[in-house]
Amino acid sequence: MPVLRVNKIRTFFIPVIALLALNGCTTLRGTGDLGVVIERASGSVQVVNTTQRTLLKQVKGLGDLSHASIVYSRDARYAYIFGRDGGLTKVDILKGEISKRVIQSGNSIGGAISQDGKLVAVSNYTPGGVKVFNADTLELVDNIPAVYGADNKQSKTVGLVDAPGQRFVFSLYDAAEIWLVDYSSGKAKITKYKDIGLQPYDGLITPNGRYYIAGLFGEDGLALLDLWHPEKGVKRILKDYGRGTKKMPVYKMPHLEGWAMTDDYAFFPAVGRNEVLVMDRRNWKQVRKIPVHGQPVFVMARPDGRQVWVNFAYPRNDTLQVIDTVNLKIVKTLKPGKAVLHMEFTPRGEHIWVSARDAGTVTVYGTDSFEVLTTLPLLKPSGIFFTNRAHQIGL
Image (tube, rainbow, N blue to C red):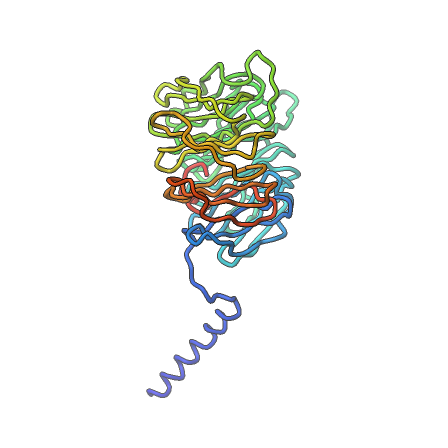
């Protein structure tokens, strides 16, 4: 009997060891300190380790990543990458390989993952609308054409985010509408809010999931939907926010998802002006203008809310500035390299990773010392997405 028991143990362990060897799994690791950096020119991404500040694996074959974004599965193992060519790609960041890829439209502009992690939604320009997929298999679950008007035109959809209650929210660029899609019953229930303002070009949701805000390209102001009281409809805030009556060049429209939210204030980029605007979150009124280096694109708060980091549009896009949120003043100016496109804080905010596309680098700074900790070479890097996003609303 003892001999038979040993033989059984050997029989069990040999194929397991062989399987591990075949898969190359010589290192066990979690996903909590991992992330993905977009290499936009080559259709590839780099899986990175944020603790060791190293590159782990390049994943190729992801199509057009010129305006790519990423969301994560609940276990933070899989990155869902939304490409401009309509590609939706599920990447296993532990194995460093593509799990599944589908071309779901002609031109997509981002996506979101549901509160329970079972649905992945994609926002499309061509044809206009949102498609919803099974997060495990990438099989199509729902198709929501953004149809509007008497002649049933289809609008570009923008600003797609997830919201509490198993909901998605997005805006219709051509239709001046916001749609709220509720999957809590298992089937989509759509509420449409019309005449919210001309040409909503992007949207954000506040970190607590209460407010959805759409920026307007066709007129000044913002459209706000209170998701705790959606029956009250959309109201307009900051009626003077935008380009105003004075015509000025706008080199790049700011991303609303890059707004900074602290306990008391929202910090956001002025359109076409070299200013960061400060808004009181209690009444959504502007209280301050902070002069900055150029036209701001992303205005991002460190996780503790003590700092706000700002990057800028072309041609002044080689610079970062840091605002202290207590005295509302610039405390540091940095020069990471040409074409600074994106920033991402480590989960607790001790470091920030900064991509400089034309310099071909990602630079890691200490957020207290502002010292360069690491510089990593990448192919035209742009978006940086760490796995702690898996547990944040709207990211």
